[in-house]
Image 1 (cartoon, rainbow, N blue to C red):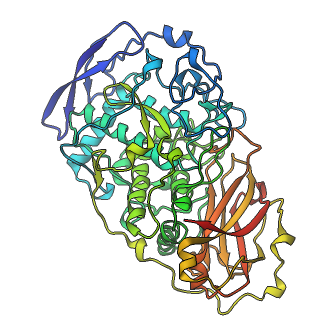
Image 2: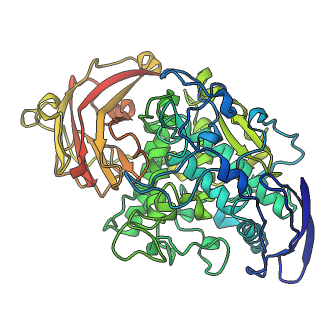
Length: 584
């Protein structure tokens, strides 16, 4: 059954536009027409959705059926090594969890389609005009008014409407906080190679929904340009109280034009604004260039069904996670507007989508995928069929349920969007200064096998580590990347954690200044990312070929590594640290 209702839009305070939106009624049998005004937040009657279907759905922790979405009669267990990942089964969707025990106080599961057995695959529609996503700091007042209006209409839709703001936010909760199970284990789109394609599809439909709501198919999400100094603040359009883009539960330090810390770990770093900007650009260079020369480093480790994801890509780790941390409520005794002790909205995965800035943040994350491939070398999309054929589930702008494949989102122009260009200063921000002269005296440094396993990282540690090969030729470097790998990371997933890694440095290194040749990279954890399978362990990799060259260590059999905890090291243990060679 379908029905329509008029929507009143005001973009400049004078002109008003009325459009008709066709709505597919999925759950119930009753329809009601109502008006939505961008100038009145209290005039939405809402849909009288029939709750009987949802009430009668058995939300058992059943397994995902092979090949995609299946009805209850088609459930089949999955082997632990089965792949690619199918789209989640909606009947299997159950309660999401915030931490080790508490459940999300509402269902994050999407509305259940009437015909679960016949969910079609999405086909990209023809593109007549490319939607150009602008940098948030460059948009004009007309764009802001249009964006505010579209978001306001979305927020006024019924909480069970699949294109309503609540349901759009719930998508992140369901995929990221344990609502879906695969082979009895949580399906988690973070911490693996699913991270980039999942969020690209997520934003694709969200953007089209906003455009549909204001009858503007050219509408494009703004991207939070945090990789450029001009964009290293909360975009002003999101900081206007009383508008649909404002979120009262953000961290108080996001206001007043404060500079973001792209390595944020929950505490304020006491340094100058100039040093923060410099650190940010250094982190961007390391994560996009130094530490991501190959697809495996950039996208993260492969996702194997039935096995917890074990390795983030460089951009997912930093700056993606620190932007969440810096923007969202940080757990503590004086939390604003009903926030819990777990942190809220951008500060926690289950609630991140409740802050409209989440979508602009991830637009820039998606843009990093584009910019990374432009750097060249071995930087290209994965070709593994298990990745290409992995699937997700979404509703489109017409409330029609679809399955989508990773392979269909690799060309953004075929998806109908592109990014307005802006300068990329981090591309040429390779550190050039050394913090020390000469090399660390190895006689005073313990070898790695005397330091690890490490029960807790409660202080800075230095250790020496042997390299499998030295003085490698350029051909060898092109074929294989030398990687410093931290294995068996176990930590309290409910805590903010960060540690920094340096080569050829001692424990007294100033870790607040990152623009130095010795800085290798950082690890950051956002609470509640992987809280469901607590027996799992992770790995963390840093590509070091470029660093060895820059620090004059290419011919050294043994090098010094220093690890400096910034936050949460007392709840982090490390099993081993090795140097390996990985194929591109």
